[in-house]
Every structure is written in C-alpha cells, then in structure tokens.
Amino acid sequence: MRYRLAFFAGLAMGFVLGARAGRERYEQLKQSARQVAQNPTVRNTAESAAQQGRQFAGKAYHTVSEKVGDHVPEAVAHRMRTLRAHTNGSPEDDWGTSNT
Image (cartoon, rainbow, N blue to C red):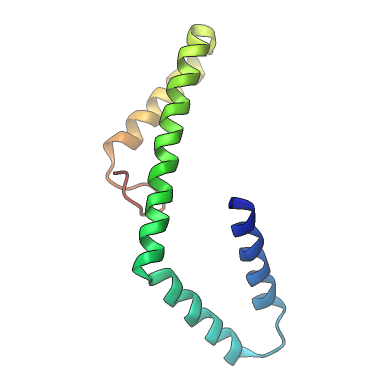
C-alpha cells in the first residue's frame, strides 16, 4: 500500500511539474489536492494510519529491547531514552499530528 501511495504521489507530482497545460490547470490541480487533504475522511484515515504506526513502532521497540538487552552501546541507549521521553511528553509531533 505504501508503494502504491508513493507511486501515485510521484505520478501526480510529475504531472504537475511536467504539464504544459499552464498555470490555470496547475491551480485546478492544487485546489483539488487541497480539497482532498481537507476531507474529514482522508484526515481521519491519515490519523488512524499514524496512530497504528506509532503502536507498531512501540511494539517493535519493546521486542527489540527485550532481545537486544544490554548489547546496545550506552550512547545509543541514552539517545533512545531521550527521544522516547521527548515524544511521550509532547501532544504533537513535528508534523502537527497528535500523539494520541
């Protein structure tokens, strides 16, 4: 699914950048993209996908932590703890989505 999304995003970007239809067509495409991005269904789906990604990342973190244990260098372990504490304390990430 991720590869399809990347393909279609690249296809759309290529069309926009390579289109010879002029500024008017570009503005139409931009307006359409804005409407899709502001659609509540699309926003909810994107938020759900982000939330699932965070859940899977958390599970992977715990699984790797259990299997790796003390074999990780202290500098890496400290950096991971710092990043984890930073993301757990903030209501939004760098993309403006909530961490709920």
